[in-house]
Image (cartoon, rainbow, N blue to C red; front, top):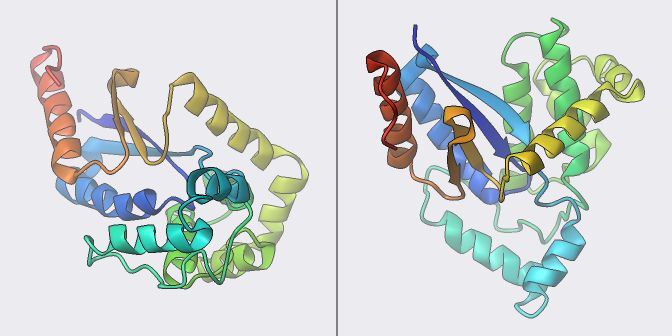
Length: 224
């Protein structure tokens, strides 16, 4: 079977990545095993206080950013965003939840937890932040989400303690830099020749996947 690999970079605190999960689901529903998503992290909210100060310091700070996100999310009724987003909970960094999620990914890869646990945990963390306005930079919040997904926290602690999760996250960040990833979310297809960045609609992603599958079936170069 011809399969299109897609490297998918995102930041857990990025609203557009949260919305983009709908497109990932649609692609999986449309193409099934013909596509394979490789989930990676990039750093957009590594220092949220600095990001808000630099980008929104003259536009209302956290309150202005909150208003912007709520307005943006209003175009997507399928996605629920808590009206208190970034007001009652202000995660200091996405690096902590990224590290935790990478440990879950490693644990799943070694058979420590059930298949799809990593994806459930990532989505659980996004839900906790965007829908419930919880501070997912906090260890106890990460653990609560992971336990609800069937994760053994002792496994996660071990993978963080021995440096494995740090190495995996560092690899993601280094690959994002090497591939020229501009932000979250980013889809990389065709061995890096095609990059879709930001709020990209499903039809654009679909067209790229469809053309790559067609090219592989006919042994012709993709025109995308």
